[in-house]
Structure formats: structure tokens, C-alpha cells
Image (cartoon, rainbow, N blue to C red):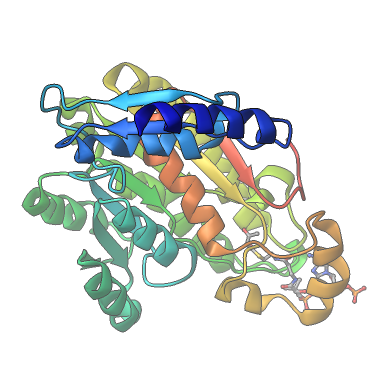
Length: 314
Ligand code: CAA
């Protein structure tokens, strides 16, 4: 019975309270089952750690339209560059998990992988080279079909590592034109639509090596540091238009990009510098990106969020 239930629950709350556990009772009115979701989520979360021995009534009340807790990005279109594998693939999958419609972009040689990922998440795809002069027009045409982009994640990037005395102009230009000019090329066609709709989330994947520099990466560090400067400038222009512009700066992440690093350098130089003692996972970067894309991050703009296992603290 209701009365006995209350007494029992209060007794349980008293007995287990000191052990950092809580106990409550929720009465759900018949017909209000759909409305109990938010209450249960609150009670099982850390947010209710100081709430104990309470009786909560969930009544039917008026029909309220709740957002889908599992799909906070429903209705949003997200463009992800370099989406066929690694960090970009994980970002595309995580955005889709949260309800966004994903447009995955990659270079033509990655077509098979990109096809597979987009088929699995019901996304659209575009084959283009973000460093090329044609890329802005290609992206504009595709996004016109999809009604514009609400979220853009600049993830595509390359390395052409060499000590500076051996670095060729080609290695310099390839990295700058993909990792820095590519960000300009992809943002330019998306920007007017975001300004008009007064909403946008622009997230660029920079790197720890753009923050601290890196042996044999004068080209990569320059481009990735450039991405941070680009972000800080654009954040100021987008602020009044509801557009946030941020950077995620990953450390060393367990992807194919790591395969270019000699094993000896990885084990003897890089790993000992990472306080958590391991490489990061692509999904750990993806979850940081998806947070920045969410409504919860609306007041964060012009920021660089490091996700590097403590290797560099700025
Ligand atoms: N830190 C310190 N020393 C390094 C180093 C590093 N990361 N990488 C190489 N070295 C050292 C080597 O140990 C070697 O030292 P010794 O001469 O004492 O043996 C020396 O530099 C190599 O010099 P060489 O002139 O012979 O170099 P090379 O022309 O053969 O080029 C290399 C080799 C391209 C530098 C290769 O060692 C390499 O790829 N190193 C890794 C560089 C690196 O860390 N890149 C980051 C890639 S991950 C990434 O970019 C993703 C991200 O955002 C985090």
C-alpha cells in the first residue's frame, strides 16, 4: 500500500544514506508512464546525489512534447570531412547516433570505405578534395539538396613529416592546403546559410602538435595552429548570429595515422610523454565533438578543448 511504501522507503534511505546510496519512491499516475522518463533519469544520475527519502508524484497533467533524450541532434544536418575512417568515421557515427543526418565527405580513393560507413548510418556522401578550387562549389550544390548544414566538423587532415632541413615545398604545400586552406574552403559555402538561420556549430579538429609544436612537423604544426587562429577570429564574427566556432585538439589517437611513426619513436619518445599511459581512442574525440555540437555547449565559442591524456596542458 502507498502508506507502508513511504515508511519503508524512508527507513531504507536512513539506513543506506551514509553509504552514499539514495532511495526514493516515485508514484506514476496511470496514463503518465511516458512522462516518467525525465524523473527517473534525474534520480539515477549524479545530479540527485543529495536527494534522499523523497516521494515523487508524476501526474498526467497536460500533454507535453518532450525532446527525444536519445536523439538530441534530431533535425540537424552535419557535414563531416574525412569521414571514411579513423576519427572522422567515429564522429560521423556518433553524430548519427544522436539523431543528426550526416553528410560524409572524403577523397575519391576512399569511396568504398565512405560508402560503407554512410550506408550503415543512413548518411549521404560526397567525394571531393577539400584542398581543391572546385570543392566549395561542390559542397554548396550538395548542401542545397539537403537544406544546408547546421554542423560542420573539419576533420580531414594529412601528415607529411620530415625534419625541416629535408622538408620539400610540396610537403609544406600539401599539408597547408589540406589542413588549413581546406577548412576555409569548406566553411565558406556553409557560412551564409548558418548566418541566415542564426544557428551553426563549426568544430575543427586541430592537434596537440599545433599547440606545442612537434619535431618533423613544421608544416603540420603551422596548419594546425592556423586552425586555432581561424577559429578565434570566426568565433567573434559568428557570436551574434548564433554560430559557435571551436577546436578540439587531440593528442595521439589510435588510428592509421600513427602507423607512419617509427615503432621506436612511439615507444621510447611519445608514449612516455602521455600521463594516462596510452593512446586515445577515436570515440573519445568523437564524444567531445558531439558535446560541442549540442545545445548544452551554446555558450562555448572560440575555445580549444584538448583531449590528449594530459600530454600537454595549455
Ligand atoms: N620526437 C623526438 N625525436 C624524434 C621524433 C619525435 N617525435 N621523431 C623522430 N625523432 C628523432 C629520431 O629518433 C631520430 O633520432 P636519432 O638520429 O638520434 O636516431 C631522428 O629524429 C631522425 O632524424 P632523421 O634525419 O634520420 O629523420 P628522417 O628523415 O629519417 O625522418 C621522421 C624520420 C619522419 C622524423 C620519423 O622519425 C617520424 O615520422 N617521426 C615521428 C614524428 C611525429 O611524431 N609525428 C607526429 C605524427 S602523429 C600526428 O601528427 C597526429 C597528431 O595530430 C598528434
